[in-house]
Length: 112
Length: 112
Length: 112
Ligand SMILES: Nc1ncnc2c1ncn2[C@@H]1O[C@H](COP(=O)(O)OP(=O)(O)OP(=O)(O)O)[C@@H](O)[C@H]1O
Ligand SMILES: Nc1ncnc2c1ncn2[C@@H]1O[C@H](COP(=O)(O)OP(=O)(O)OP(=O)(O)O)[C@@H](O)[C@H]1O
Ligand SMILES: Nc1ncnc2c1ncn2[C@@H]1O[C@H](COP(=O)(O)OP(=O)(O)OP(=O)(O)O)[C@@H](O)[C@H]1O
Ligand SMILES: [Mg+2]
Ligand SMILES: [Mg+2]
Ligand SMILES: [Mg+2]
Image (cartoon, rainbow over all chains, first blue to last red):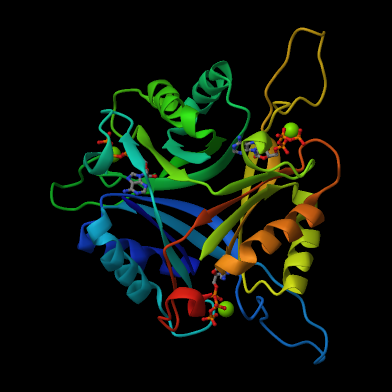
Protein backbone atom coordinates (compact mmCIF):
# COMPACT_ATOMS: atom_id res chain seq x y z
CA UNK A 1 0.00 0.00 0.00
CA UNK A 2 0.95 3.65 -0.37
CA UNK A 3 0.42 6.70 1.77
CA UNK A 4 -0.26 9.86 -0.21
CA UNK A 5 0.35 13.00 1.85
CA UNK A 6 -0.76 16.40 0.57
CA UNK A 7 -0.31 19.89 1.99
CA UNK A 8 -2.77 22.23 0.34
CA UNK A 9 -4.52 25.58 0.73
CA UNK A 10 -7.28 25.30 3.33
CA UNK A 11 -10.02 26.71 1.10
CA UNK A 12 -9.31 23.89 -1.38
CA UNK A 13 -10.16 21.14 1.09
CA UNK A 14 -13.77 20.69 0.01
CA UNK A 15 -12.90 20.56 -3.65
CA UNK A 16 -10.12 18.04 -3.11
CA UNK A 17 -12.32 15.92 -0.89
CA UNK A 18 -15.09 15.88 -3.48
CA UNK A 19 -12.63 14.92 -6.21
CA UNK A 20 -11.26 12.09 -4.09
CA UNK A 21 -14.74 10.79 -3.33
CA UNK A 22 -15.62 10.89 -7.01
CA UNK A 23 -12.48 8.89 -7.72
CA UNK A 24 -13.54 6.33 -5.13
CA UNK A 25 -11.07 6.91 -2.32
CA UNK A 26 -12.28 5.10 0.81
CA UNK A 27 -11.04 7.42 3.49
CA UNK A 28 -8.84 10.30 4.47
CA UNK A 29 -7.21 11.86 7.52
CA UNK A 30 -6.98 15.65 7.78
CA UNK A 31 -4.77 17.77 10.06
CA UNK A 32 -4.33 21.49 10.36
CA UNK A 33 -0.82 22.66 9.74
CA UNK A 34 1.15 25.61 8.51
CA UNK A 35 4.22 26.05 6.40
CA UNK A 36 6.28 27.88 3.89
CA UNK A 37 7.71 27.03 0.47
CA UNK A 38 10.19 28.68 -1.86
CA UNK A 39 8.77 32.17 -1.37
CA UNK A 40 9.22 31.66 2.35
CA UNK A 41 5.70 32.76 3.05
CA UNK A 42 6.36 36.30 1.86
CA UNK A 43 3.12 38.09 1.28
CA UNK A 44 4.69 41.46 0.75
CA UNK A 45 8.12 42.99 0.52
CA UNK A 46 8.71 45.42 3.32
CA UNK A 47 11.25 48.19 2.68
CA UNK A 48 13.03 46.08 0.11
CA UNK A 49 15.69 44.56 2.29
CA UNK A 50 13.77 43.27 5.28
CA UNK A 51 11.73 40.12 5.14
CA UNK A 52 9.97 37.75 7.45
CA UNK A 53 9.32 34.07 7.01
CA UNK A 54 5.68 33.48 7.61
CA UNK A 55 4.10 30.15 8.36
CA UNK A 56 0.93 30.26 6.32
CA UNK A 57 -2.07 28.07 7.26
CA UNK A 58 -2.31 24.84 5.30
CA UNK A 59 -4.28 21.62 5.49
CA UNK A 60 -2.46 18.30 5.55
CA UNK A 61 -4.17 15.23 4.07
CA UNK A 62 -3.20 11.59 4.38
CA UNK A 63 -4.73 8.96 2.13
CA UNK A 64 -3.94 5.27 2.29
CA UNK A 65 -4.36 3.65 -1.13
CA UNK A 66 -3.61 0.54 -3.10
CA UNK A 67 -0.32 0.66 -4.99
CA UNK A 68 -2.07 0.76 -8.34
CA UNK A 69 -4.16 3.79 -7.36
CA UNK A 70 -1.46 5.99 -5.96
CA UNK A 71 -0.46 7.84 -9.13
CA UNK A 72 -4.09 8.54 -9.99
CA UNK A 73 -4.84 9.76 -6.48
CA UNK A 74 -1.88 12.13 -6.66
CA UNK A 75 -3.16 13.46 -9.99
CA UNK A 76 -6.67 13.92 -8.62
CA UNK A 77 -5.35 15.93 -5.69
CA UNK A 78 -2.99 18.03 -7.79
CA UNK A 79 -5.71 18.95 -10.26
CA UNK A 80 -8.27 19.80 -7.59
CA UNK A 81 -5.84 21.72 -5.39
CA UNK A 82 -4.28 23.87 -8.11
CA UNK A 83 -5.09 27.57 -8.33
CA UNK A 84 -2.02 28.51 -10.38
CA UNK A 85 -0.87 30.92 -7.72
CA UNK A 86 2.11 30.42 -5.43
CA UNK A 87 1.57 28.34 -2.33
CA UNK A 88 -0.63 25.66 -3.93
CA UNK A 89 1.22 22.95 -2.05
CA UNK A 90 3.05 19.65 -2.31
CA UNK A 91 1.91 16.06 -2.66
CA UNK A 92 4.18 13.15 -1.82
CA UNK A 93 4.00 9.36 -1.79
CA UNK A 94 5.60 6.77 0.44
CA UNK A 95 5.34 3.04 1.00
CA UNK A 96 3.30 1.58 3.82
CA UNK A 97 4.09 -1.96 4.90
CA UNK A 98 0.91 -2.86 6.65
CA UNK A 99 -2.50 -1.41 7.37
CA UNK A 100 -5.03 -2.72 9.90
CA UNK A 101 -8.73 -1.80 10.05
CA UNK A 102 -9.28 -1.54 13.79
CA UNK A 103 -12.92 -2.66 13.99
CA UNK A 104 -12.50 -5.87 11.98
CA UNK A 105 -8.81 -6.63 12.35
CA UNK A 106 -8.49 -6.98 8.57
CA UNK A 107 -4.96 -6.42 7.28
CA UNK A 108 -3.45 -5.36 3.98
CA UNK A 109 -5.43 -4.03 1.01
CA UNK A 110 -8.68 -5.40 2.52
CA UNK A 111 -8.14 -3.03 5.44
CA UNK A 112 -8.42 0.08 3.30
CA UNK B 1 13.17 1.08 12.97
CA UNK B 2 9.47 1.36 12.21
CA UNK B 3 6.94 4.12 12.55
CA UNK B 4 3.50 2.94 13.62
CA UNK B 5 0.80 5.50 12.86
CA UNK B 6 -2.71 5.11 14.27
CA UNK B 7 -5.85 7.16 13.75
CA UNK B 8 -8.32 6.35 16.52
CA UNK B 9 -11.39 7.65 18.31
CA UNK B 10 -10.40 10.49 20.67
CA UNK B 11 -12.05 8.96 23.76
CA UNK B 12 -9.84 5.88 23.29
CA UNK B 13 -6.59 7.81 23.68
CA UNK B 14 -6.13 7.14 27.38
CA UNK B 15 -6.80 3.43 27.03
CA UNK B 16 -4.40 3.09 24.10
CA UNK B 17 -1.75 5.09 25.89
CA UNK B 18 -2.03 2.93 28.99
CA UNK B 19 -1.81 -0.24 26.91
CA UNK B 20 1.29 1.07 25.13
CA UNK B 21 2.95 1.98 28.43
CA UNK B 22 2.16 -1.46 29.82
CA UNK B 23 3.77 -2.97 26.73
CA UNK B 24 6.85 -0.84 27.32
CA UNK B 25 6.68 1.67 24.49
CA UNK B 26 9.17 4.49 25.22
CA UNK B 27 7.35 7.42 23.68
CA UNK B 28 4.59 8.68 21.47
CA UNK B 29 3.56 11.75 19.49
CA UNK B 30 -0.11 12.76 19.39
CA UNK B 31 -1.87 15.12 16.97
CA UNK B 32 -5.47 16.13 16.63
CA UNK B 33 -6.98 15.30 13.28
CA UNK B 34 -10.25 14.47 11.63
CA UNK B 35 -11.29 12.13 8.90
CA UNK B 36 -13.73 9.80 7.28
CA UNK B 37 -13.67 6.12 6.32
CA UNK B 38 -15.92 3.88 4.25
CA UNK B 39 -19.13 5.27 5.72
CA UNK B 40 -17.92 8.72 4.73
CA UNK B 41 -18.65 10.08 8.16
CA UNK B 42 -22.40 9.56 7.80
CA UNK B 43 -24.03 9.75 11.17
CA UNK B 44 -27.56 9.80 9.87
CA UNK B 45 -29.37 9.46 6.59
CA UNK B 46 -31.25 12.61 5.77
CA UNK B 47 -34.25 12.26 3.45
CA UNK B 48 -32.84 9.12 1.97
CA UNK B 49 -31.07 10.58 -1.04
CA UNK B 50 -29.10 13.44 0.39
CA UNK B 51 -25.91 12.91 2.30
CA UNK B 52 -22.94 14.85 3.58
CA UNK B 53 -19.41 13.72 4.11
CA UNK B 54 -18.43 14.65 7.59
CA UNK B 55 -14.92 14.88 8.90
CA UNK B 56 -15.22 13.35 12.32
CA UNK B 57 -12.70 14.19 15.08
CA UNK B 58 -9.90 11.64 15.46
CA UNK B 59 -6.59 11.42 17.26
CA UNK B 60 -3.45 10.55 15.33
CA UNK B 61 -0.64 8.70 17.10
CA UNK B 62 2.94 8.12 15.96
CA UNK B 63 5.15 5.60 17.69
CA UNK B 64 8.75 4.88 16.74
CA UNK B 65 9.67 1.29 17.58
CA UNK B 66 12.26 -1.36 16.98
CA UNK B 67 11.55 -3.60 13.99
CA UNK B 68 10.90 -6.60 16.21
CA UNK B 69 8.27 -4.75 18.26
CA UNK B 70 6.22 -3.27 15.47
CA UNK B 71 3.72 -6.10 15.00
CA UNK B 72 3.09 -6.31 18.73
CA UNK B 73 2.65 -2.56 19.03
CA UNK B 74 0.10 -2.63 16.21
CA UNK B 75 -1.77 -5.43 18.01
CA UNK B 76 -1.72 -3.55 21.31
CA UNK B 77 -3.19 -0.46 19.67
CA UNK B 78 -5.81 -2.36 17.71
CA UNK B 79 -7.02 -4.23 20.79
CA UNK B 80 -7.15 -1.13 22.97
CA UNK B 81 -8.76 1.10 20.33
CA UNK B 82 -11.49 -1.30 19.27
CA UNK B 83 -15.10 -0.66 20.23
CA UNK B 84 -16.63 -2.85 17.53
CA UNK B 85 -18.54 0.09 16.08
CA UNK B 86 -17.79 1.82 12.81
CA UNK B 87 -15.11 4.47 12.84
CA UNK B 88 -12.66 2.65 15.13
CA UNK B 89 -9.75 3.67 12.93
CA UNK B 90 -6.71 2.50 11.02
CA UNK B 91 -3.19 1.57 12.07
CA UNK B 92 -0.32 1.49 9.60
CA UNK B 93 3.39 0.76 9.63
CA UNK B 94 6.26 2.16 7.61
CA UNK B 95 10.04 1.98 7.66
CA UNK B 96 12.17 4.69 9.21
CA UNK B 97 15.80 4.88 8.14
CA UNK B 98 17.25 6.81 10.99
CA UNK B 99 16.20 8.25 14.34
CA UNK B 100 18.15 10.76 16.45
CA UNK B 101 17.54 11.57 20.10
CA UNK B 102 18.06 15.32 20.14
CA UNK B 103 19.44 15.76 23.67
CA UNK B 104 22.14 13.10 23.41
CA UNK B 105 22.72 12.82 19.68
CA UNK B 106 22.27 9.04 19.89
CA UNK B 107 21.24 7.44 16.60
CA UNK B 108 19.45 4.26 15.59
CA UNK B 109 17.69 1.92 18.02
CA UNK B 110 19.52 3.52 20.97
CA UNK B 111 17.75 6.78 20.12
CA UNK B 112 14.31 5.36 20.83
CA UNK C 1 13.83 12.17 -1.85
CA UNK C 2 13.66 11.97 1.92
CA UNK C 3 11.20 13.20 4.48
CA UNK C 4 12.79 14.43 7.69
CA UNK C 5 10.31 14.58 10.57
CA UNK C 6 11.21 16.31 13.83
CA UNK C 7 9.33 16.64 17.10
CA UNK C 8 10.82 19.48 19.12
CA UNK C 9 10.13 21.90 21.95
CA UNK C 10 7.76 24.63 20.75
CA UNK C 11 9.98 27.52 21.88
CA UNK C 12 12.74 26.15 19.65
CA UNK C 13 10.71 26.49 16.46
CA UNK C 14 12.09 29.89 15.45
CA UNK C 15 15.67 28.87 16.01
CA UNK C 16 15.26 25.64 14.05
CA UNK C 17 13.49 27.45 11.24
CA UNK C 18 16.25 30.06 11.01
CA UNK C 19 18.91 27.34 10.96
CA UNK C 20 17.09 25.50 8.19
CA UNK C 21 16.73 28.66 6.11
CA UNK C 22 20.42 29.41 6.56
CA UNK C 23 21.17 25.88 5.35
CA UNK C 24 18.99 26.51 2.30
CA UNK C 25 15.98 24.31 2.96
CA UNK C 26 13.20 25.26 0.51
CA UNK C 27 10.16 24.62 2.65
CA UNK C 28 8.68 23.09 5.75
CA UNK C 29 5.35 21.94 7.16
CA UNK C 30 4.58 22.51 10.84
CA UNK C 31 1.90 20.89 13.01
CA UNK C 32 1.09 21.24 16.65
CA UNK C 33 1.34 18.03 18.60
CA UNK C 34 2.04 16.67 22.03
CA UNK C 35 3.88 13.69 23.35
CA UNK C 36 5.97 11.93 25.89
CA UNK C 37 9.36 10.22 25.83
CA UNK C 38 11.30 8.04 28.27
CA UNK C 39 10.43 10.18 31.28
CA UNK C 40 6.79 9.76 30.35
CA UNK C 41 6.18 13.48 30.65
CA UNK C 42 6.88 13.51 34.38
CA UNK C 43 7.41 17.03 35.53
CA UNK C 44 7.38 16.20 39.21
CA UNK C 45 7.21 13.17 41.42
CA UNK C 46 4.08 13.19 43.51
CA UNK C 47 4.25 11.25 46.79
CA UNK C 48 6.99 9.08 45.44
CA UNK C 49 4.92 6.20 44.13
CA UNK C 50 2.21 7.88 42.14
CA UNK C 51 2.83 9.28 38.68
CA UNK C 52 0.94 10.54 35.71
CA UNK C 53 1.88 10.37 32.08
CA UNK C 54 1.60 13.84 30.68
CA UNK C 55 1.40 14.71 27.04
CA UNK C 56 3.60 17.76 26.80
CA UNK C 57 3.18 20.28 23.96
CA UNK C 58 5.55 19.76 21.04
CA UNK C 59 5.90 21.02 17.50
CA UNK C 60 6.15 18.56 14.63
CA UNK C 61 8.12 19.52 11.52
CA UNK C 62 8.22 17.84 8.13
CA UNK C 63 10.89 18.72 5.60
CA UNK C 64 11.16 17.19 2.14
CA UNK C 65 14.77 17.14 0.98
CA UNK C 66 17.07 15.67 -1.62
CA UNK C 67 18.70 12.40 -0.59
CA UNK C 68 22.14 13.99 -0.36
CA UNK C 69 20.92 16.71 2.01
CA UNK C 70 19.04 14.58 4.49
CA UNK C 71 21.89 13.86 6.93
CA UNK C 72 22.89 17.52 7.02
CA UNK C 73 19.32 18.65 7.55
CA UNK C 74 18.98 16.23 10.47
CA UNK C 75 22.20 17.64 11.96
CA UNK C 76 21.03 21.22 11.52
CA UNK C 77 17.78 20.46 13.32
CA UNK C 78 19.43 18.50 16.12
CA UNK C 79 21.95 21.26 16.81
CA UNK C 80 19.36 24.04 16.76
CA UNK C 81 16.77 22.14 18.80
CA UNK C 82 19.08 20.97 21.57
CA UNK C 83 18.86 22.50 25.03
CA UNK C 84 20.56 19.62 26.84
CA UNK C 85 17.53 19.09 29.03
CA UNK C 86 15.14 16.16 28.82
CA UNK C 87 12.38 16.39 26.26
CA UNK C 88 14.45 17.93 23.45
CA UNK C 89 12.83 15.63 20.92
CA UNK C 90 13.38 13.14 18.13
CA UNK C 91 14.27 13.50 14.47
CA UNK C 92 13.67 10.72 11.98
CA UNK C 93 14.13 10.12 8.28
CA UNK C 94 12.16 8.09 5.77
CA UNK C 95 12.11 7.61 2.02
CA UNK C 96 9.62 9.40 -0.20
CA UNK C 97 8.98 7.94 -3.63
CA UNK C 98 7.57 10.92 -5.38
CA UNK C 99 6.90 14.59 -4.76
CA UNK C 100 4.73 16.89 -6.88
CA UNK C 101 4.70 20.70 -6.75
CA UNK C 102 1.01 21.43 -7.13
CA UNK C 103 1.19 24.77 -8.96
CA UNK C 104 3.55 23.61 -11.70
CA UNK C 105 3.05 19.87 -11.78
CA UNK C 106 6.82 19.35 -11.50
CA UNK C 107 7.79 15.97 -10.09
CA UNK C 108 10.81 14.57 -8.30
CA UNK C 109 13.72 16.66 -6.98
CA UNK C 110 12.62 19.62 -9.16
CA UNK C 111 9.38 19.69 -7.17
CA UNK C 112 11.13 20.53 -3.92
N1 LIG D 1 10.35 21.18 1.19
C1 LIG D 1 9.19 21.10 1.83
N2 LIG D 1 9.05 20.23 2.83
C2 LIG D 1 7.89 20.09 3.50
N3 LIG D 1 6.81 20.83 3.24
C3 LIG D 1 6.90 21.74 2.25
C4 LIG D 1 8.08 21.92 1.50
N4 LIG D 1 7.84 22.90 0.58
C5 LIG D 1 6.58 23.30 0.76
N5 LIG D 1 6.00 22.60 1.74
C6 LIG D 1 4.63 22.73 2.25
O1 LIG D 1 3.77 23.05 1.19
C7 LIG D 1 3.16 24.31 1.44
C8 LIG D 1 2.99 25.04 0.14
O2 LIG D 1 4.25 25.15 -0.49
P1 LIG D 1 4.36 25.91 -1.85
O3 LIG D 1 3.24 25.48 -2.73
O4 LIG D 1 4.51 27.38 -1.60
O5 LIG D 1 5.71 25.32 -2.45
P2 LIG D 1 6.63 26.05 -3.52
O6 LIG D 1 7.72 25.08 -3.92
O7 LIG D 1 7.05 27.39 -2.97
O8 LIG D 1 5.70 26.26 -4.80
P3 LIG D 1 5.14 27.63 -5.43
O9 LIG D 1 6.29 28.27 -6.15
O10 LIG D 1 4.06 27.22 -6.33
O11 LIG D 1 4.64 28.47 -4.28
C9 LIG D 1 4.07 25.01 2.43
O12 LIG D 1 3.34 25.97 3.20
C10 LIG D 1 4.54 23.86 3.27
O13 LIG D 1 3.57 23.53 4.23
N1 LIG E 1 -7.99 5.26 3.37
C1 LIG E 1 -7.71 6.02 4.43
N2 LIG E 1 -6.63 6.82 4.40
C2 LIG E 1 -6.31 7.59 5.44
N3 LIG E 1 -7.01 7.64 6.58
C3 LIG E 1 -8.10 6.85 6.66
C4 LIG E 1 -8.51 6.01 5.61
N4 LIG E 1 -9.63 5.35 5.99
C5 LIG E 1 -9.90 5.77 7.24
N5 LIG E 1 -8.99 6.66 7.65
C6 LIG E 1 -8.92 7.36 8.94
O1 LIG E 1 -9.39 6.50 9.95
C7 LIG E 1 -10.54 7.09 10.57
C8 LIG E 1 -11.51 5.99 10.95
O2 LIG E 1 -11.81 5.25 9.79
P1 LIG E 1 -12.84 4.06 9.91
O3 LIG E 1 -12.52 3.27 11.13
O4 LIG E 1 -14.23 4.60 9.79
O5 LIG E 1 -12.47 3.19 8.64
P2 LIG E 1 -13.47 2.18 7.89
O6 LIG E 1 -12.67 1.46 6.85
O7 LIG E 1 -14.67 2.93 7.46
O8 LIG E 1 -13.83 1.11 9.00
P3 LIG E 1 -15.27 0.85 9.70
O9 LIG E 1 -16.13 0.14 8.69
O10 LIG E 1 -14.98 0.02 10.89
O11 LIG E 1 -15.84 2.21 10.07
C9 LIG E 1 -11.08 8.07 9.56
O12 LIG E 1 -11.81 9.11 10.21
C10 LIG E 1 -9.82 8.58 8.93
O13 LIG E 1 -9.24 9.57 9.76
N1 LIG F 1 9.24 6.45 20.59
C1 LIG F 1 8.69 7.60 20.19
N2 LIG F 1 7.82 7.61 19.17
C2 LIG F 1 7.25 8.73 18.74
N3 LIG F 1 7.49 9.92 19.27
C3 LIG F 1 8.35 9.99 20.30
C4 LIG F 1 8.98 8.85 20.81
N4 LIG F 1 9.77 9.24 21.84
C5 LIG F 1 9.63 10.56 21.95
N5 LIG F 1 8.79 11.02 21.03
C6 LIG F 1 8.36 12.41 20.81
O1 LIG F 1 9.42 13.28 21.10
C7 LIG F 1 9.07 14.15 22.16
C8 LIG F 1 10.26 14.41 23.01
O2 LIG F 1 10.77 13.17 23.46
P1 LIG F 1 12.03 13.16 24.43
O3 LIG F 1 13.01 14.16 23.90
O4 LIG F 1 11.57 13.34 25.83
O5 LIG F 1 12.60 11.71 24.20
P2 LIG F 1 13.50 10.91 25.25
O6 LIG F 1 13.95 9.65 24.58
O7 LIG F 1 12.77 10.80 26.55
O8 LIG F 1 14.80 11.82 25.42
P3 LIG F 1 15.29 12.62 26.75
O9 LIG F 1 15.85 11.60 27.70
O10 LIG F 1 16.31 13.56 26.25
O11 LIG F 1 14.07 13.32 27.29
C9 LIG F 1 7.93 13.45 22.89
O12 LIG F 1 7.10 14.38 23.55
C10 LIG F 1 7.23 12.77 21.75
O13 LIG F 1 6.37 13.71 21.08
MG1 LIG G 1 5.58 28.77 -2.48
MG1 LIG H 1 -15.84 3.89 8.89
MG1 LIG I 1 12.19 12.55 27.53
